[in-house]
Length: 192
Image 1 (cartoon, rainbow, N blue to C red):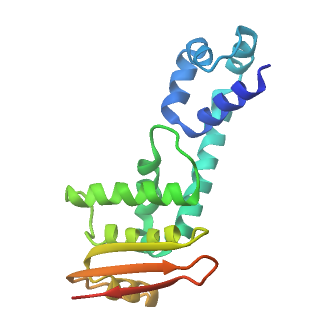
Image 2 (tube, helix red, strand yellow):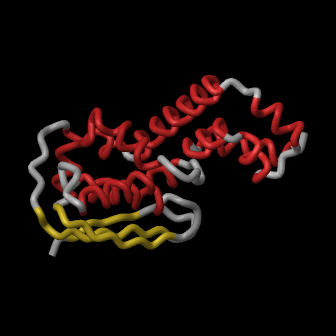
């Protein structure tokens, strides 16, 4: 069995729902694209579809859990809708499944939905971008990030952290995150 090709195909089957459907409809065509021999293809085609689906769903559940940890205030603001929105955000082509990439995918998805007036509250996209800035700035090495927000992100984050109702006001807010190499992360929000 060509181990590298088999592992690549399995990884994609577990993370890409469209490819999974295509594989179970035409396993030979998909396996051939991944460079598997006919013998290896037949072995993979014998895998129980329900087991693959169950494992894939468990992976998505774990990714959603990590995304909740990466974007805790966004998860709190979205409540029960978080998991469904997260699944929509990561649907489609397989991508690098890291906390940062999943948080970025959800943030971009929320931005698009808010821009099209398909998601309430409209400030949730700002909140996700605010939390994503900490993830980006927390990477190793020096960092300097600037972000602009449409809403008063200070009052939103304070209200969510205290567990009280959010009464968001449209107020342009700017943020800067900075860290010297091996230094401590510093950040500040400004409102003109």
